[in-house]
Image (cartoon, rainbow, N blue to C red; front, side):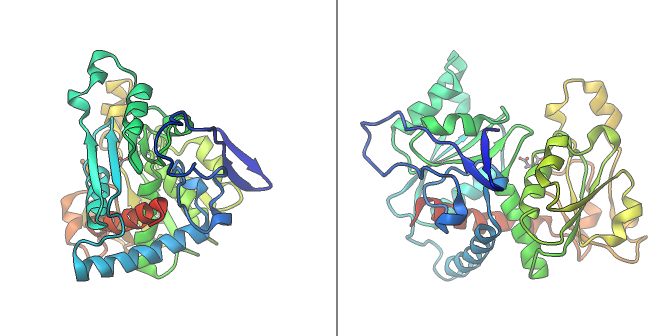
Amino acid sequence: MAVKRESGKIYFSRQKPVFESLPNRGLKPSSRRCEAMGTLKGHDIISALQFTREDLLRLFNLAERLREEIREKGILDYAKGKIMATVFLEPSTRTKLSFTFAMVKLGGRVIDFDVSRSSLAKGETDVDTLRIIDGYDPDVIVLRQSKPGFPEQIAPMIRAPIINAGDGPHEHPTQALLDVYTMWREFGKVDGLTVGIMGDLKYGRTPSSLSYALSKFKDVTIYYIAPQALQIREEVLKNIEGKVEYHLVNDLSEVIEKLDVLYVTRLQKERFKDPAEYERLKGSYKIDAAYLKKFKHIPVIMHPLPRVWELDPSVDELPQARYFEQARNGLYIRAALIKEVLGV
Ligand code: ASP
């Protein structure tokens, strides 16, 4: 990823937008550094690494405020007259829907790009497709694509702020927002938490982004729990080195009683080149209520969803299950993010 580091700060490089003749909404901020701005207005949201601790806490508090306002008034008018384009070139339920609901509840409109009926089928490239959508002048584009790094590559060519809604196995920064927001709501803080991240840490994009967001807090410990073949990628460890205490383990039983949160992820079937490898690893980690009840301490159980076989529905009955609430939190934290990016 072409992120420039200077004295520990993170900058995202910018070029001039290509559609000079469109109505001028003001150029995107020339520096990706959020901290100095105290706001994410106009910024591309590419990686969870770009958030500062202040950004995260500000968004959590804004999400709480919007939750209240939405409960009182239903539809708000912050985003009145604004348009969000959703461009999902990979399947999605929660991310696309919660962004859509969030924008509608903020009073804005959403135009969805219907990939199945588009000219992509005629061989048009995703770059051209994005440039065309941008030319119709949306105020923000929410983009999911299978190529790692694609949102960052395309962002300099696009006038509207781009929000990365998942780039293949690489990152899912807004999932990290809702994950850490859920922990913050649960414990009233993030500093000092011990989090187990279990499952497909190699092909999953939520473990990397979650690790990056957690690394912005103090005294966090992460246990990466996975069979050897699915352990966390080296690049992720490099990015959190010195910021988080972490351990790689393959047996949940050894560490479960130390955890505040157990974050379970599914095996990313669609990313396996060899179906035999998927079959071999299928079922290699799984929790159910009977297993969890063997321990004196059961951590809060989270999952980005969808779940397949790794998280048995029997866990739903336990008071520690948080994954449906976690998904619902996505609505409010995404509303907070949209509001900031739009600067409304
Ligand atoms: N929904 C999450 C994602 O888009 C998790 C998953 O698909 O396993 O990455």
